[in-house]
Length: 385
Image (tube, rainbow, N blue to C red; front, side):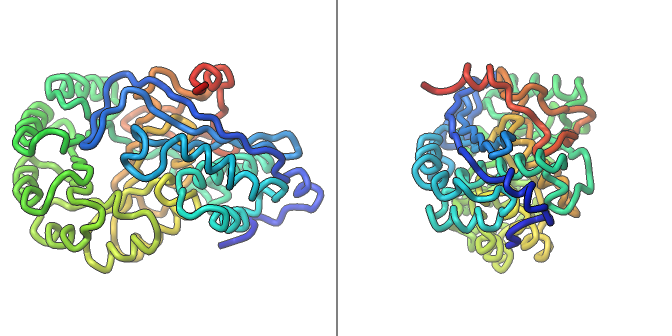
């Protein structure tokens, strides 16, 4: 892992010293209920990280969770505690551009805690980028695209509401691919729901599904056949994360490609999925992999194995979404696009100027660092007391 990304003059490096690290929990209401197999979300929880350098420049980052420690072991409460107690003390006084050293220091201070580390690393990239007047993508090798196809998730569980929601997105030319969250209902109910969606949107939209580990192999095999007949193009994590062998057996019998999500946090996880032929696609997320650099490393393993890349999300605001876009923009191939619709599902975003969605794509911000600026008034409004 590189210790520094660019040759920076000594006088400028003094200005890059990390002076303070602040973590703030925020709770932002969503425009509608977001229903997963294990929980429902009506407000999205984040930890906003602010890193101030001796120069006065501030970098921002974000860690997102879904309804507490149900998706992974981290919650916003544990993320803030880990940052305040262990990670921040390990980094105060370190030069922000020494990203490799920062990651090693964080790994020595706390095991896993990938969302917490990812938020800090995002803020470091933001601070260094602002110092050098360069986008974070430039520090990762340079962007090869400035816009990425972006889908919208249908997750209310009510097919009539979901069809109406999808129609609005199509009419506004915001999204023409829809990921449907399934697994909270019975398999039979979900298949009826999917049939209604497929018939209503046939020929005008692409459908994928995410079961969030809700099924066993028997149920999955039965449902996969129905979903294939409905024209579904991708099935995300139908089996529990531990069951790569089952995913491999299911993949061998499915005409629809499978995507690994919860089963891939580390490069070692990615290598195991590849070795077992457990998925044809992988969902990339900073909160899983622990930072921008690690996300690129997981993507490199997948790419070497011929596994397609997909930009996953946890309903990030424009802060977290921008960090992901900086990474995704540098990947040589991103055949499945991304799902960073999170800013649109919030009643209010946390930045002064939200990300731009147009022509079924999300556009890479053009400013330095992550390319977005935190709105202090909104941070205060949604900060948890």
